[in-house]
Length: 451
Ligand SMILES: NC(=O)c1ccc[n+]([C@@H]2O[C@H](COP(=O)([O-])OP(=O)(O)OC[C@H]3O[C@@H](n4cnc5c(N)ncnc54)[C@H](O)[C@@H]3O)[C@@H](O)[C@H]2O)c1
Image (cartoon, rainbow, N blue to C red; front, side, top):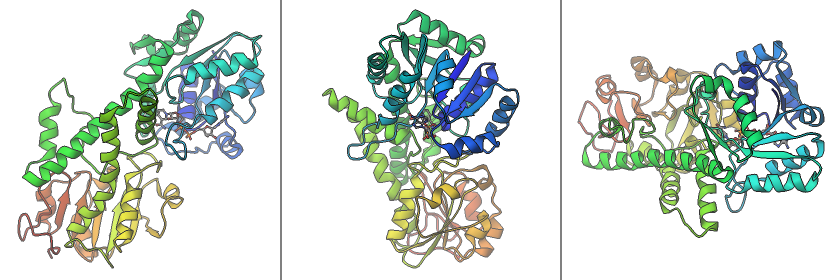
């Protein structure tokens, strides 16, 4: 099939490359000329494992092309995906749909035969109706079917998620559109990934309900983690103890510094706004967002607790800045609130991230960037693991102890076992487990680091 992918960001590029890999002919369109030029030279605009090879292979085979022009790709296509951004709108936090509606108008201008227009961007309920209205209003001469097909891929595992989805959600009542969608996803369907056909509005809501539920799970375990710290329980064991119940499941039960990223914060916010507009406030989701916001900044107090609550003049070294490993995406990363809170308390911040430092530079001020975990830790008063990149899982603790000014490790992802760290002479604190602890005195008072 011939596909035009409007918007070549995370979702557009990954989906476009995967559809091309299935054998379809895809043109990825984007207004960002530099991005298109870079892609044509084989330079990826984002860090995503396996993406460079996938793009290069399909580009070479002639199935994947890039363009800054709308006209030809849209006119030729049998299916047009809208995969542009839907960021939080300034002012009220609802989804900003201006990019989606602009794309709809631009598509309408070029259509010349029956085409299926598919919204892959995450959009509030009713957006498909509006896209439909825009296109039919501008082009009453052309028949279109506007379909909702939300995307569930996760950054860092995007290609695997696209090629092995738990389900494919297709929101349309149009029989011809259903056939086109079945053909587009046929390779996955043959692999038994279920296609769920629903109404358009239902499909739009499924995406938001899924993200809100996952955000709720994370926030639930984060609150349980806080309780664990106060009562001497271990959140890792609680999470396992509840997660092994099939009705609950083990995923998204990892306590940490709060959720971030390009989706959960903005999507929970947009869902709350949609619900308020319909006078059905979603109080659980509202609480999730509020609890999460407070939590990110509260992580700075956890660092300060190791120093009796005072950080003025201390040097704090952060490992990991991106909102999760295997991405360079800094959108709404918990590290942003943490860095600002540490600086507000008078600390100097150093940081190392394997992929996110370039992006971080545009959102964080007065941070010293380092080129390895060890150069970051040098002369630091505390080392804080913020993102659980693989390379932070087996740090040489003896070496760290020698080069740091104080052997203090604050592990916001529970990567280490407390006894292993403490045995090496560190003062150690983590999330949802008793702490801070040191060999001197377990648990220690929160006044000063050991060693
Ligand atoms: N990033 C994720 O993990 C993820 C996962 C699932 C769903 N989504 C959703 O997918 C959508 C896209 O997200 P993203 O992270 O890929 O965004 P992004 O910001 O990385 O990319 C959007 C791209 O669209 C381009 N664009 C905007 N208007 C355009 C137009 N009229 N014509 C051509 N190009 C245009 C921009 O230049 C940009 O390159 C959002 O609604 C998001 O919520 C994202």
